[in-house]
Amino acid sequence: MTAQHTIAVLGLGRMGEAVATRLAAQGRQVLGWTRSGRTSGSFDTTDDPHEAVAKADVVLLALFDGPACRQVLDTVEGSLRADTMVVNLGTIAPAEASELARRLGASYVHAPVLGSVPAVAAGALQILTAADPDTLDRVRPVLEALGTVRRVDDASTAAALKLIANSSLAGAVLALRDALQQADALGLSRTQALDVLELGHLGGFVARKRPFLDSEPKAAMAVGTAAAPAGGTADFTIAALAKDMNLLAAASDMPLRCVSELANTPGGPESDIAVAATAPAPADAVLAPLRAYIRGHATGDPGHFRAAFLPTAHIEGVRDGVFVSWPLDEYCALFDGSPAPDEPARSRRIDTVDVHGTVATATMTLRHGPDTFTDVFLLVRVDDRWRVANKAYHRHL
Ligand SMILES: NC(=O)c1ccc[n+]([C@@H]2O[C@H](COP(=O)([O-])OP(=O)(O)OC[C@H]3O[C@@H](n4cnc5c(N)ncnc54)[C@H](OP(=O)(O)O)[C@@H]3O)[C@@H](O)[C@H]2O)c1
Image 1 (cartoon, rainbow, N blue to C red):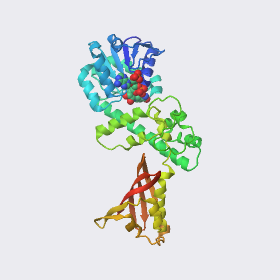
Image 2 (cartoon, helix red, strand yellow):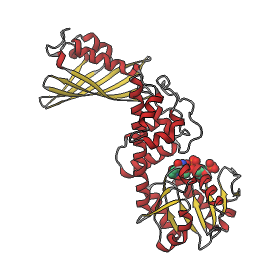
Image 3 (spheres, rainbow, N blue to C red):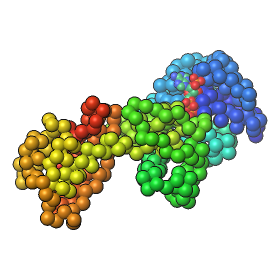
Image 4 (tube, rainbow, N blue to C red):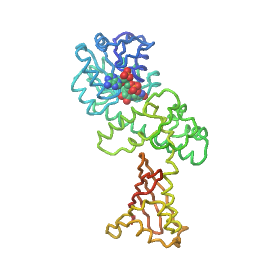
């Protein structure tokens, strides 16, 4: 079983280092190379990518993205032996995976993996493997040393499935962020909240990521600032997950909310993905004009609307089939300073707030008697104060 294959691992980042370490620990002959020239105490390395692949019958790629795969293959292709199998463990776009499969033919195995560094160390990856059957038979012992091989029809499908798997991971990170923000707003301690979240649907993720999650919340993030990374070395970076979600949005040509939400997180791109779950709630400053707007409706006092809106704002929507655009003065004139008679039965709820530097969008649901409105706000931070630049509404029938 041991030393059946001579294995080159190209790319000794988080995954490549872990993969090479596990294979070497099992007595396999491993030679690693990485662009930065980093070496390892656990297996042999070379600073010459041609040397790394020259004797290898299996070349494992653990590179960041599709362009990195292309560049490295451009460099080493002439040094690959005719019978060498190239196994790509990286997460790349479906079109990029197809292109590599076409380029290398039957010797190419597209094998994106579910699981991170600890799963590599435990041989517990789930490997979405697209390969020619004979090639898969030959490469299977190496892959099974890393985890479970799950056959997929073709490289493009394997790449697409991997992106879909990671979209649920991004969703889990952001769901955890929302839960922690709500826990903070309720005054619960971070430890108490995490202890209970460990018992629920996100339990496994929370348990694994506790070192990144444990610190109490910091003050709301100022625009354009990044807190220091927390919790130690990242297993899977925000940069890598953001790369995957960008690839997914581009491949599907569908909006994907988590792409911008991941960009708006503390810690910076090299932080572990769990740090994205520690993003603070939107600052009170951006909520202030929305709360003033709510007070305007609750009291009927147009002064609150003047505090909420920029003087240039318009309030726009379709009324009885006709588009109406009120300047702020005209809108304020609709209110006489006293609450609506049915005010105790009315309700308003801020649903979303998305801040992008000095601009933000927000939505609100208002239930006024028999009418339900959805309000959509465009906010701008002018002279260090957030104001509503425009509002559009829809009245649900
Ligand atoms: N980390 C995880 O938990 C995980 C899990 C599943 C899948 N993946 C996927 O596995 C792949 C590797 O992830 P990782 O976490 O190990 O990333 P990483 O730690 O950032 O390492 C990336 C590797 O790619 C190399 N690289 C980047 N650009 C290159 C270029 N233009 N030319 C040559 N080499 C280049 C880097 O080389 P140097 O740093 O030496 O310059 C490094 O070896 C990614 O596709 C990732 O999405 C990661």
